[in-house]
Image (cartoon, rainbow, N blue to C red; front, side, top):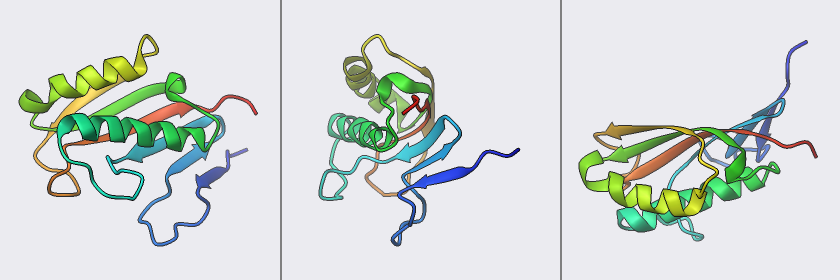
Length: 127
């Protein structure tokens, strides 16, 4: 028996991917640091807050939260310059509920001024 794949939202509405994919009781999502109006915010601290806000919102759509994340991959432009500021926001937002994580330094991301992107795998609690 194979698990079904559920995409949230169900329709792409012109996006290149769904916000969250759920297989069984596991959610997968990748988020970028956009504000509520869909604009990229400026600076690593603001982008760190925005990307974690987006992650929390996406997981909330499937009934999960930051504490349900099993693995987080952090893509950072210029690790030497941006890691400390990201880690400050990360430590405050995640508190003691820290998942396994991997930080990867990258030369560039999808948008020229984007400094951080997150990919998460999370457990979806029973409804």
